[in-house]
Image (cartoon, rainbow, N blue to C red):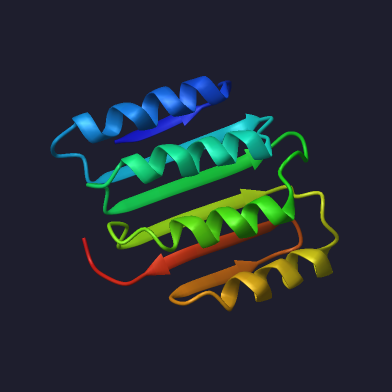
Length: 136
């Protein structure tokens, strides 16, 4: 299942992710948020919803922001939390237009890269975080 949104609320996220456990054969989920304001609270809603989606094997979250409202600490903690979900064999996280200096993005990438089984790729305005531990 792939969802592309340009406007949403935290309640929308929780509603979608809460319904995932009821879908018996949903193993892959991609969520793209394009040109939306996304906050730390919205990212926390994703973590909360994913914790309940125990059949999910692959998760992708792509955020291209029109504002700079996600903190580097939130990205780091979110990655740490979902990297511990045993059911997620793979995930891809992409955040673009961060309010960090390019060296801040590299520092964030280095910290995240230290997590087990996590790889990271950074550019001046984006960070791509992924876990590859199996094939779907």
